[in-house]
Length: 139
Image (cartoon, rainbow, N blue to C red; front, side):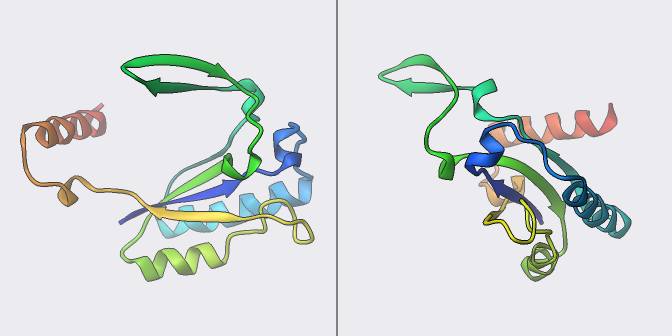
């Protein structure tokens, strides 16, 4: 089972302010634990939305909308991707996640399970994804 731990953005993270060294150290220690346990798949912080864009789909058209985006509560500042045996194991790991903006700062993480190909009814499109996944592993 794969889970994504998403760090919700704040006005501070959206300003581009870099985290303090103590927070980077806490995050490094946590991610080292995940790696030693063999459950870490990926993790990184994201640049502020001012450096990004969205593609809006409406009426069969695509429109590019440049950042920044005003609704900070809808943005993600970073993520960690883990693969564990159960929801309970994922919950245990996320309880240990360092406070994302420091112990005394407000912050929030959200955890969501990823779909696996086995969750979908077998069909040709799912098989194309399965082949794509296999070729990525072999590369």
